[in-house]
Length: 200
Image 1 (cartoon, helix red, strand yellow):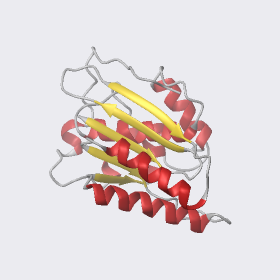
Image 2 (spheres, rainbow, N blue to C red):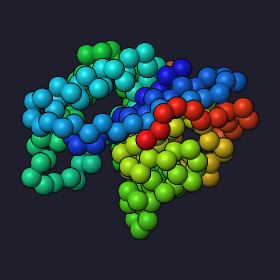
Image 3 (cartoon, rainbow, N blue to C red):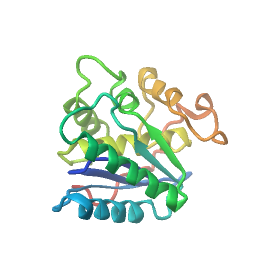
């Protein structure tokens, strides 16, 4: 089963492709795409990236926008986010949107407040997934997105997590035919699990 986590950014787009299955080793590939062009050409490149990454995916977990974001590039950033979302729609992909607070909740055990910045998330990811060596918070977020869905589907890629982290499962709107979180939330990862793939 292929699960894809997408952490949207116009300048450093994080992607994790996660392969999981019952009683099988799991594998991941993490990357960050940094376009060298701007404007419409950049959007074309992001569409191509998403088309390639989502190909064959059972589910794509896409981080929703930070609604309080502002600044000179907000218009471009928001437009690009929707272009990516429409690309996934056009592809017929099953998409689950997870907001930044839920990402932090799963990674850190709390979704806001002191100690929930980007540096804290990447530090937590490095500790929990030892072979994740990317020094990039977009890649870290993409991995958390994919890992959250993997656990929700009953194929966790980490050992059991504290309840504070698992609360993120209840906050996300999942497809209606998936099992209830309390049925699968604390299933441990199989002992044979290991991490493979090309990391940053």
